Amino acid sequence: MNRLRGPIPEILAPNNCSLKSIALRRNHLGGKLPQSWASCRQMEALDLSNNEVEDSFPSWLGTLPNLYILILSTNKFHGPISSPKANHPFSKVHIFDISNNNFNGTFPSQYIANFNNMMGGDKGQGSLGYMTNGWYSLESANVNYKGVQMELVRIQIALSLIDLSCNRFQGEIPRVIGNLQSLKGLNLSHNNLRGVIPSSLGNLTQLEWLDLSSNNFAGEIPAALVNLTSIAIFNVSSNQLTGQIPQGKQFHTFKSDSFSGNPGLCGPPLPKPCTEGHRQEPPLASQNEEDAEHWIDWTLVLLGYGCGTVIGLSMGYIFIQIRRPPAWLVNMVERSRIRTASKPRKSSPGTHGR
Image (cartoon, rainbow, N blue to C red; front, top):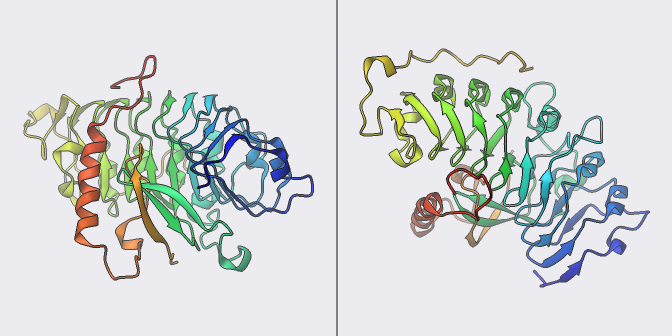
């Protein structure tokens, strides 16, 4: 953090660019992104978080063949996300964070369909051992763990994370998202998303964090989500969901604040009982939707509180030079989750629940 101000200079990326990473987070840089960065064909990581960049979504970054980390959070990016300019955009990306901006419209499903590194099976790239020296040249990156912004230092293998929270996205969640079977964290909170929660999310068996809070989702919580046996953080509060909350497996561990703000929901852990007509059938084993087709060494530095509520690393994947995090950190993180859940975000025209 250098408190740099003004536009980002083009000279950072000359025509013969060989940069592997650009990390300019926590400055006061504004203006637009230099399109000369499109010539940085070896770039693996880009972190511009916490600046004042005012631009439309740089879809041309999808042409970079080796980009693994893209973090544009907490800027002034705006407008709809344009369709991809590349045939296979962001196919190697593992961390895709554009949270806390002013994006609107629908998020194109073409991007999700091309997140090959987040897919299981033959399409998933899995280990990133083929990277230069096995390490990202980016020394650290910022993500949010349960509402607490953390700095992750010396990334070897990035977990698969998507954070679109705190924007003005509309439309429905594309069912193709169920193909991202290596995804660990998904945060779509604080948008204007609507429709039903797709049961294809039940295919994301490695998912550990899911935040869909503060949107306009309706209908029932899919029973298929009970198949998410790795999930530890779940939040669908402040929507228009109805019916019985699924029971069993990890759902027994979620507290009532994960479901609050949905007057039509019933059943444990909420105090409202379900009538006979509200009861769900037991869930079936995980099924593909119709269009469905390691270790890490991260050192954490506490930076403050962010808008996102779930994107981050499970404590099972975090090593802080001791075997387990201290109790004070666990308690503070839990308190921050409650604070963040009740924290109003910046108002936007037509935004639900803000």
